[in-house]
Image (cartoon, rainbow, N blue to C red; front, side):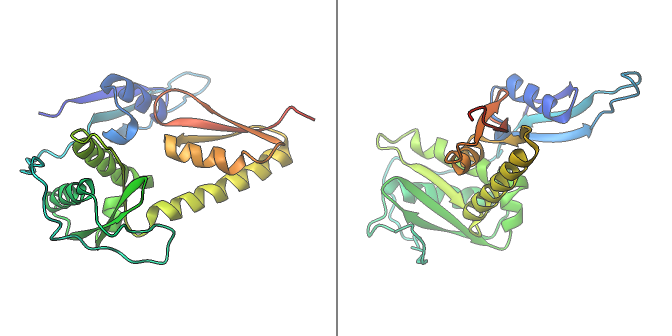
Length: 242
């Protein structure tokens, strides 16, 4: 039975941080249900804390998959797109295992979709092709991240030569990166104009890295992460250097 906790905090973000600490996992591995957002009250009087329900994100099914023997890549389909990702002629066994596992998870989620493979020297890209892309992406890609985490854990734990597995659909990863870079540039201009620090909240490690890299060449600004857990805030502020 999945453990569920009711957790309170001054804000929803604080309650989620507490939930991550209680379960010992990052935000993308939790199911979060907001019970109440809380109120500040009047001069601290009558204030109410935010309350959430939290539980581990799981797929309560037996996938019935065995990776003891290499599987023939009968269902493999190589996607050909004019993108920098290049498919290798022979798909690695890890990619086939990851593809089969993801297809099994999607089937048990009642999602009618196909999984195509692209492989680079550094990573394996699994592309989900179907009609339920919004459901699979989730809010800010959280469902996609959860699927990616599960497949990486299940496949790479049995392999000596581990490869990063990236799960994508509808080119979401690239579009999200472009939107984050645009956001970083917009907030950077605001920080320069107002000469005040700008806070960007609730970002996972990958998204924070995109923000940092987008602004690292601007000597008039500094960026830093603040807080605890996987979802931390980013501070964009004018540099003190003249």
